[in-house]
Length: 337
Image (tube, rainbow, N blue to C red; front, side, top):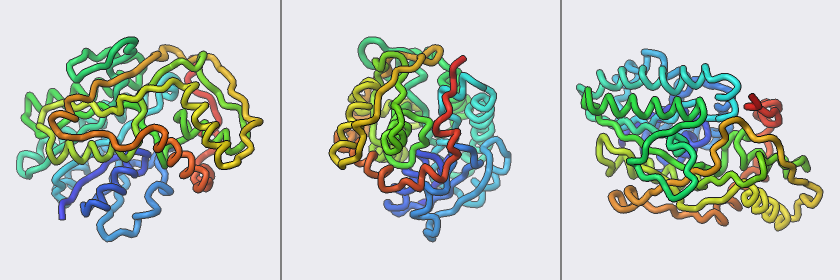
């Protein structure tokens, strides 16, 4: 049985990845420092699995090396990161520490470990590193032009990993994914926040005029892609992971209201309100994912229509998820500066 490490495994994508890895018969070690976005609700389904271990640890801690030597994982999926753009506008400090300094420490520990043991590092990044894409779609060779402190910190981490591949010959791969949605996502993000407000008959706040466009991918499809990259990806390469499906925020909101009406939720009283946009807000992100499709034979399996319904139903059936979070983290507006 192959052992793998997932950093940030109490978060949204990390916990969904662990669930999938366990179902594929991997032994998974979850390393998470436990922040506001970490949630043990996300791991309740498998926390007693004999093939799962949880370790509370910051990736800035040098004890990472001890864990690597003890478990000798065949792969590290690095998902430990601060990810909320609005928070990075209010206070970039944590983003620099986690997304840059943390990745540096992880690379140093992995460099010394990988000299002796066969292993891979999959560094998970974002499409936001490419900046505002008004036309077309960005391939892996597109220049980085991050707009927010969050995106800049992720861009820096990507460059760090890439430099370690070239300088130290570490076996690492970088992935850049579009906007994820699905179960277990913190409601500071658009879709779970809108669902929370719909379920609680609150107004639906939309930035600007609702025209900001994102490429949306169901989280399980992303996780399948990450496992495919681990198994078949080429060391040193970058892989874009996307659905090729763009929707603006207003379209997403109307989709959710439609689903709500189908389950007879009294959402007819819920109103869409437009709020002041955040500073430096990119209008559009869009990825060209032909490389992973052609070279690794990966394709997204979940349509937005299917995925958004699965997502809405999960939150509707798991209202205790919201109760496990601080209410101010759900309703408070950040990033006005």
